[in-house]
Image 1 (cartoon, one colour):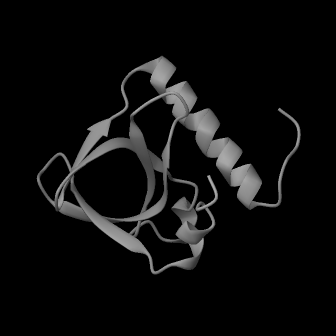
Image 2 (spheres, rainbow, N blue to C red; image 1 turned 120 degrees about the vertical axis):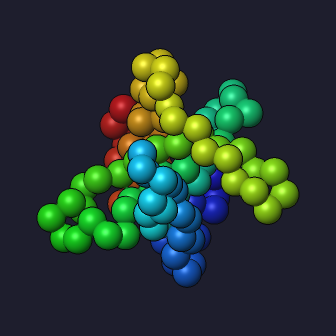
Length: 102
Protein backbone atom coordinates (compact mmCIF):
# COMPACT_ATOMS: atom_id res chain seq x y z
CA UNK A 1 0.00 0.00 0.00
CA UNK A 2 2.85 2.38 -0.69
CA UNK A 3 1.12 4.11 -3.61
CA UNK A 4 -1.84 5.78 -1.87
CA UNK A 5 -0.10 9.15 -1.61
CA UNK A 6 0.22 9.29 -5.39
CA UNK A 7 -3.55 9.65 -5.76
CA UNK A 8 -3.42 13.11 -4.20
CA UNK A 9 -0.35 14.31 -6.10
CA UNK A 10 -1.25 13.39 -9.69
CA UNK A 11 -3.58 15.12 -12.11
CA UNK A 12 -7.18 14.45 -11.10
CA UNK A 13 -8.74 11.35 -12.64
CA UNK A 14 -12.18 12.32 -13.96
CA UNK A 15 -14.90 9.79 -14.76
CA UNK A 16 -18.43 10.27 -16.09
CA UNK A 17 -21.31 8.44 -14.41
CA UNK A 18 -24.85 8.59 -15.81
CA UNK A 19 -27.58 9.56 -13.35
CA UNK A 20 -31.08 8.05 -13.17
CA UNK A 21 -32.17 10.15 -16.16
CA UNK A 22 -29.19 9.20 -18.33
CA UNK A 23 -27.37 12.54 -17.92
CA UNK A 24 -23.64 12.10 -17.42
CA UNK A 25 -22.19 13.73 -14.32
CA UNK A 26 -18.48 14.39 -13.75
CA UNK A 27 -16.78 12.83 -10.74
CA UNK A 28 -13.19 13.05 -9.55
CA UNK A 29 -11.62 9.79 -8.40
CA UNK A 30 -10.00 10.55 -5.05
CA UNK A 31 -8.81 7.04 -4.22
CA UNK A 32 -8.62 3.52 -5.62
CA UNK A 33 -7.86 0.53 -3.43
CA UNK A 34 -8.24 -3.20 -2.96
CA UNK A 35 -9.53 -4.81 0.20
CA UNK A 36 -7.15 -7.28 1.85
CA UNK A 37 -8.17 -10.89 1.20
CA UNK A 38 -10.39 -9.94 -1.73
CA UNK A 39 -9.99 -9.64 -5.49
CA UNK A 40 -12.43 -6.72 -5.57
CA UNK A 41 -11.27 -3.21 -6.47
CA UNK A 42 -12.94 -0.08 -5.16
CA UNK A 43 -12.86 3.61 -5.93
CA UNK A 44 -14.01 6.63 -3.99
CA UNK A 45 -15.31 9.56 -6.02
CA UNK A 46 -16.63 13.06 -5.37
CA UNK A 47 -18.91 15.04 -7.68
CA UNK A 48 -17.19 17.93 -9.48
CA UNK A 49 -20.39 19.99 -9.62
CA UNK A 50 -21.02 19.79 -5.87
CA UNK A 51 -19.68 23.19 -4.90
CA UNK A 52 -18.30 24.07 -1.48
CA UNK A 53 -21.39 23.16 0.56
CA UNK A 54 -21.31 19.46 -0.39
CA UNK A 55 -17.61 18.74 0.03
CA UNK A 56 -18.33 15.80 2.36
CA UNK A 57 -20.22 13.89 -0.35
CA UNK A 58 -18.12 10.83 -1.23
CA UNK A 59 -19.38 7.85 -3.23
CA UNK A 60 -17.91 4.36 -3.27
CA UNK A 61 -18.09 1.88 -6.14
CA UNK A 62 -16.71 -1.58 -6.80
CA UNK A 63 -15.13 -1.53 -10.26
CA UNK A 64 -13.67 -3.78 -12.92
CA UNK A 65 -11.45 -2.77 -15.79
CA UNK A 66 -11.95 -4.45 -19.16
CA UNK A 67 -9.31 -2.96 -21.42
CA UNK A 68 -10.33 0.69 -21.84
CA UNK A 69 -13.79 0.07 -20.37
CA UNK A 70 -14.55 0.74 -16.73
CA UNK A 71 -17.52 -1.05 -15.15
CA UNK A 72 -18.90 0.39 -11.91
CA UNK A 73 -21.07 -1.51 -9.44
CA UNK A 74 -23.08 -0.07 -6.56
CA UNK A 75 -22.19 -1.51 -3.16
CA UNK A 76 -25.51 -2.85 -1.91
CA UNK A 77 -24.35 -5.43 0.64
CA UNK A 78 -24.07 -4.01 4.17
CA UNK A 79 -21.12 -6.26 5.09
CA UNK A 80 -19.22 -5.25 1.95
CA UNK A 81 -20.00 -1.57 2.63
CA UNK A 82 -18.61 -1.82 6.19
CA UNK A 83 -15.36 -3.34 4.89
CA UNK A 84 -14.99 -0.63 2.23
CA UNK A 85 -15.78 2.16 4.69
CA UNK A 86 -13.31 0.83 7.26
CA UNK A 87 -10.55 0.46 4.63
CA UNK A 88 -11.20 3.97 3.29
CA UNK A 89 -11.13 5.51 6.78
CA UNK A 90 -7.88 3.68 7.58
CA UNK A 91 -6.22 4.90 4.37
CA UNK A 92 -7.38 8.48 4.95
CA UNK A 93 -6.04 8.37 8.52
CA UNK A 94 -2.67 7.14 7.22
CA UNK A 95 -2.56 9.93 4.62
CA UNK A 96 -3.46 12.54 7.25
CA UNK A 97 -0.37 11.70 9.28
CA UNK A 98 -1.19 8.40 10.86
CA UNK A 99 -3.71 7.51 13.47
CA UNK A 100 -2.36 4.65 15.56
CA UNK A 101 -5.53 3.64 17.37
CA UNK A 102 -8.00 1.12 15.99
